[in-house]
Length: 311
Image (cartoon, rainbow, N blue to C red; front, side):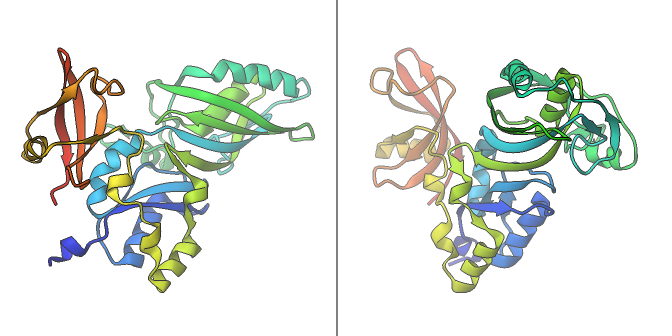
C-alpha cells in the first residue's frame, strides 16, 4: 500500500486560540500528524478564536464547498472609540461621546444591518490588490481603494449591553461567507455616530459544524499522543451534510467515475434537488464517490461530476 493510501482523510474540527494564525494552526497539525495535505476552509484573524474546519488528505478537495458556508460569530464592541484596524490591535484614531447611546438606540440601529448589506473590506484582509495581499500593503502604511462587497446578515442579536464607560455591547451574528466582523462593528459604530471597534471575536459555527464538536489544541495534542485522534475525524462521506445524498445505480456510478454526465431520476422522484445544486454521490454499496452538480433537462435530473473520489 502506498503512503498516499495510508494518509488520513477527512474533516477535523479544532478551536483556534487567540494569538495563532490560521496558517500557524495548519502547520501545527501537519507536524502533529506528520502529513503534508492539511488545509483550512476559511481564515480567522490572529486575535480571534474559535472554530476552524480543517481538511486532511483527499478531503482537501472538498475545501471549496466548505469555504462557502455561512458562519456564526460572537463579538464584543467598544463604543465611542475607533481604531486604525477596526479591532483592539490598532491605534486609537478617534473618540466620541456616547452619552446618547442607549440599548434601545443600539437595537434600532442593528435592524439596519440585517439583510443584504455592502461592506468595504478592511486593509487588514487577505484580498489581493495588484498581486499583493491587502494586509501586506497595510503593514507598509499603504492604503489603496477597495470596492464595496455585498454580504448577507441573516441574524444580528444583541446579547448584552453595558452602560458604564466605555460602553460595550456583546452581539451574535449569522452571516454569509466574506463578512468582515471588524468592519461590521465599525459600521455599526458609524451609524450610531460615535464609532466603535471589535474588542474580541469568537467563531461559533461554520455551516452545520459547531464549536461544541471541536477539540482544543491541547485536547487534540493529547489525542495524538494517545493514538485516538482519528475518532474525532469526520470522514469525507459525512463532511457535506448540507448537500442531498444520491444513491446511484452501478451504471450511473460508472459514468460518474469516468467524468460523464448521468441521468439520476425524474423531477418528481427527486423534488428536493435544485437546478445547479450540489449533491453527495454514493454507489449501491454506500461508498462515497464524490460531489456532483445537478441540472434539469425537461423532466429529468442530470448530474455532472465535480469532485470524484476514486476507490
